[in-house]
Structures are given as C-alpha cells and as structure tokens.
Image (cartoon, rainbow, N blue to C red):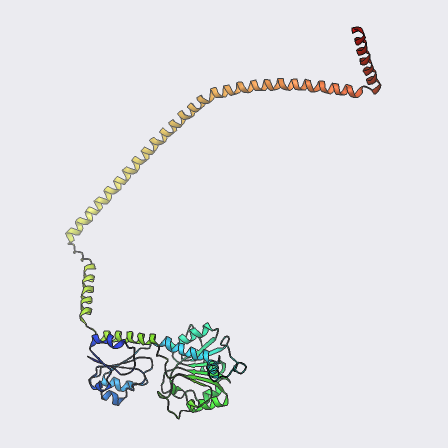
Length: 439
C-alpha cells in the first residue's frame, strides 16, 4: 500500500505510517497512491480523483470537507474521513485569542510602540466581562469557545439549526442573537445555505459597534459588504483566520479595510493538534488496513473463554427416575420433620431440668447468706448499744458543766459594785493580819 502525504503534517507522521506500506510526499505519485492525506490546501476535485485510479481512501486532517468533492468520491468508491475531534481546542483557542486581543487593543499598542509612539491616551480598552457573545454554530469548536468565554464572565448565546440544547449556551433565534450580541463568532461549515451568509442584510440587524470573529470558513462572509460596514463603523472590528482562498488575492477588499485583524489560517496548526491528527490517522488506517491476524487470534481466544465459561447442560431424566426421586424426597421430608419434633421435645425437657436446678441453687445460696449475716448483725447491735450509753454519759457531764458555768456568770452579774469593793477590802485585811501574826 502507498500513502501520499499531500499537505503539511507533523514531522513524526511519515515514520509512524511506514508499518502500513510505502510513504511518500511526491505529488507526482498520485496515480499509484492508495491513501491520500490532505488538509485545506489540496483540492480533491473530480479531475484530481480521476488522476488517482487506485485511490481507496482520503483522510482530511481537520474538520471541513468543502475542499473534497464528496459526491464524486462516493461514485468512485473512495472513502473520505476527517479528524474533527482533534482540532476543536486549537481552533477555539485562536478564536478566543482574537476575542481578547481586539477589544484590548493589543495589536495597535504593539505597532505604535514599534513606531516610537506612546499612545496611552488614544488606546482605550473594552472589557469582556458582562458582555454578550453570540455563537453562530455550536458544534465541537463553538462549545469549546463557549466554555472559555464563560471563564471571562461573558453571557453566551448561540444559534444552530442542528442543536436543540447546550449546557454551555442559551439557544436563541438568529434575529435575537444579532440584536443582543456585543461579539459574534462564526463556527459554521460551508454549505449552500451558509455561503455568503454574513451580508449587508445580516449586518444591518447587528448591534452597532459589534466585533465579528471568523475561524470557520472565509466564504461564509461577503467580503465587499463587510468591508463597507467596517468603513462605516457599523462593525467595529473583524478578526479572521479564514479567507475565500489560501492565500487571499491581492484584490480582496478586507486587506485594505480598517480594523481588520488577520492570521494566515493557522487555527489547526498547533503542535499538539498535529500530533492528535496523526493519532487519528493511524487509528483509521489500523481499522481499515491493519493486519487481521491479531484480530483473528483475539476473536478465537474470546470464543474459547466463552465456551469454557459455559456450564454443561443437565441430562434429561426418565419418567421412572423422576418417580423414584419424588418418593425419596417425600421420605426425607418426613424423616426431617420427625427429627425436628424430637429435638424440640428434648430441648424443652432439658430447659425444664435446668430451671429447677437453678431455683434449688438459688435457695441454698440465700440460706447461706442469711446464716453468715446473723452473727455479724448481733455484734453490730452490741457495739451500737455500748456507743449509745457512752454518748448518754458524756452528754450528762457536759450538761452539768454548762449549768455550773451559767450559775457563776449569773452571780457575777447580780452582785453590786459596793459588795465587790467590800469583799476586796476584806481580803486585803485578812492578808495584812496574817503577815503581822507571822512577825
């Protein structure tokens, strides 16, 4: 098998594809190619397909398939695939880069600084917070843009003919989206209905001063009408990564229109995205042209595991055998019932004997306790009586002592002062008399 890499992919892809066959980037070998890898540059028209009689598959590295004649490829029996899941993040981040750079005047600030100017007063920025972003098309890329715009505090609304619900944006009609949106981002494929969709009539329905961003398809925009709206100020700015042709012709009106911010179709050109595209290409080739032997071995192993896990089917029993089995079952049931009854009766008897033994043991324990308590009680009663008599004696003595004290104090209070003085004189006289007698 021969694989032709017609456009630019990651540098590691040719080495990864060698296991499938011959890999070349020589476009002159198209007549002998079985698989062609393209991006947006190569146009797979009817003439291109006629020049590749052995062609069996076209893989488009990216999302859009407008550069491939799908109807003619189907007639020729050529399978066409894209890598839509790979490019969503890369394109969404570029759309958001335009969304941030344009209102923040980053490009004008850079250019004036390079020119030696200090345009601090002239460059007035506009915040994204609180503004409304309208998404025309909310597929994979539009959803990723909505998630990132919400992180800036923007209100996100969307219009899509094929999507009825979205957890990241409120779906509205196209008229409401054009009237409400401060920013509009285009994420629609190129079809007969979307070609030239952004024309003078649609621009007239937009809010004055709207900023328009296009990372979808260049032919969705009528370049002449948009250039006039930019010159008149209805559209404040236009950020684009896509054109009617790559590169755009020198006569394109957008190249000379004011406030147009341009990138050369690099939405899907991140290194990470190119690696993801290579992963999907390898998966597609393995699915369609890989070695079938490992698959057959895996299928055989799975069948063996299933067969081993199955239980053998039970044998069918004859009528005689079934009758014998029923009789044996009845006999076993009766025997089990009898055994259960006997065990219940025996358990009841044993429980009764245990109860009587417990009662007898409790009686003996109580008698022994009473016998032990009697002498202790007698000794305690004797000690209590002795203590009571001793207490009575002490109380009597204390009563007598207190009565004597009260009498003495009463006598002292009753005696007048004159009597006290006489008594003191008498004691003195007696003392002097004794001393004379001794002399």
